[in-house]
Amino acid sequence: MGNKTPLYDEHVAAGGKLVDFAGWDMPINYGSQIEEHHNVRNAAGMFDVSHMTVVDLTGERVGDYLRHLLANNVDRLKDSGKALYSCMLNESGGVIDDLIVYYLRDDFYRMVVNAGTHDKDMAWLEQQAAAFSVKVQERPELAMIAIQGPEARARVLALLSEDVRAVAEPLKPFFGAFAGGDWFIARTGYTGEDGFEIILPATDAVRFWQQLHAAGVRPTGLGARDTLRLEAGMNLYGSDMDETTSPLESALSWTVAWDPQERDFIGRQALERQREQGLSRKLVGLLLVDKGVLRNHQKVVVENGGEGEITSGSFSPTLQRAIAFARVPAGTGETCKVEIRGKLLSARVVKPPFVRNGKAQIEL
Amino acid sequence: MSNIPVDLKYAKTHEWTRLNDDGSVTVGISDNAQEQLGDMVFVELPEPGQEVAAAEACAVVESVKAASDVYAPISGEVVEVNEGLTDSPETVNQDAYGAGWIFRLQPSAAAELEELMDAEAYEVFLASDTH
Image (cartoon, rainbow over all chains, first blue to last red; front, side, top):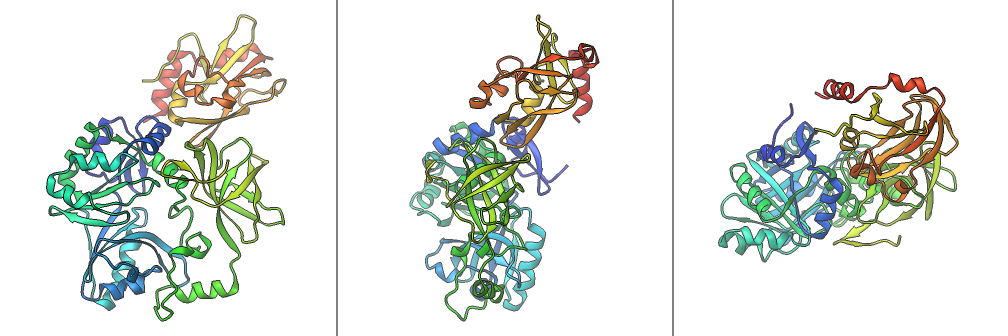
């Protein structure tokens, strides 16, 4: 038996099919992954993401710490509550994890990192913190619920008490704020839809989940979460990038803040070397032209020789086609082949996202 | 509990078989199998005319989650495939024992049918297979 989130009994009661995910018993679906996927694109679904790690970082030099720790630059965060997506790199430019960090005060940031990388992340955060006298505090007593979809905001706002709603309603995309003690509401997500991610005391989580459920917000499992994020063009740590790949090879160059030149973040030298020498591989989107389903680790064959590999592949419920991310030779053109059960099927190379706000972003 | 019709026979690899009046055998996957696999999104059918041996992988059902082989429960020649699954693979989820059939075989050794499980045996098998 694995770890259980505070919402475990709710998953069981809702007919969730529980699987092991990074040591946690988590719902993969509650019946139909595809229906849950469509429901998020068309209405509102909720995800228990309490297994993710919430870390509060405090201290006078926490800004300096994060400028050293992250490939993206927290100086981009001018307004309180603003969120930043970044990779945390090792010295050789490999990705230790990807994360969201919220700027709350000059001496207080909140970070959310992946569940599967919990132990090494915490060790790394602590190790780097010493030089900056930063306090690294994990918040395991907090739960986290993501409510996503075109109707998500309205459904959530209708349930909030007046004072909490006053904080949540004006939030702009990619901002978060504390509301009523330990409730933290952020307009962020991992689906390509509008919505909230709410970090709240575990003791409040069950009641709020039940209220959302009663209000018609449908429990949505990790299966749909994966197809939603893939359609939305969002990387998954461990599949699309890891410690052996840099952000430059993972379609995450946009998250690397090169300026100012003198900011010496961990991994910078390795990335600069890679940039000067030129990249040998890149991460692209694929759309399967032939019938079939793209899957992780299928072999990609490109025209001028060379091979790549699918890092995340699935059937896209929104597009009704197979889509994927694949790491391919840098010179890969507009088409390639994917080997599926010994046959070479045709695929088009496309630029993610595949879907945003319910609408296809690529030509089929 | 999954549905296990008593008039069918079952393979350990979770296919069902129905013996038709003309001696041919229709094959699909069990309700339990479709439920384990989840939403079907693609079915790769065998070729009509193809000779298959018992326990040979001859079709593939793909759900959002994974690809899974479908094995021939008995030896024979594929005489018909369910073309409807090409455009509507979800039929396998909706009607596993009816419209969700996958292919039809003309058995080359009909006695092999006797080696398959009846509904009761399959139910016991499922209970021992899942913990």
